[in-house]
Length: 340
Ligand SMILES: [Zn+2]
Ligand SMILES: [Zn+2]
Image (cartoon, rainbow, N blue to C red; front, top):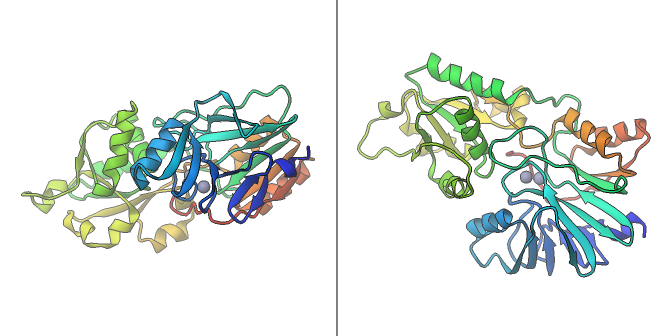
């Protein structure tokens, strides 16, 4: 079977005709395989959903228990049949519960990366290479930061910058903008790894997911709501407060002493973006691969072909061509990684 007959892009997302299922569909379908809980990949309203236990839990937390009619928990690294098509979920290292999906049928194998990253993250399982007897026919990769200018610096360096700033400006509140799922917990985890043991204050929008991470054994240390009950502004001086970036423009942020705005995102490598958002201390922390990590992964997998999903496809397709790997963009729509 040619790979295009096993998986191909449609308006609703990647579709598998022999299995009659979609991967990360962007509108409601009968059968959905979901790589991870970010809202653009995991949507509500499907009939059947196959995902890891943690992704199912995250979907239930965000959309309610009735986010789908029939949830199917997929253990990692085991082969299952969905309508006669082999599917396996393997850790993707992106956020808690995130998975790559290997689809195999009549000797053809397509590996869908979902969103993934290769570097260490204290809050989720690391990316794993799927052991296959020979290289996969197709590797479908994300391409959020697929440009040679994207080379994410060391995470610990970024956290050190934050901690240095906190000790340099003890009368200011460090307000750190974070995406609620994944980034918030990772920033807290990295701060703890760096030895920061003080209470970290969080916006109400982060609480449910932080609690869920803790319930899954991820250590986040002492967290308190960032509310002023009977206290004063000065109570937050010298503290670290995490919140969704959207909250920084409203009344919420004005309760803090002389706030110093930080934002943790892979996009912070672009100075212009940091400026536009009024970010004083950009923290380059990405939950996606940078350029080198994308290339290393492809070089190690040695797929026959690479198909590139959302993000910046042209540079990666071009690089594959130079390296004698057939490649094409899939032009899937409906995925947004602007806030990650
Ligand atoms: Zn994601
Ligand atoms: Zn994505």
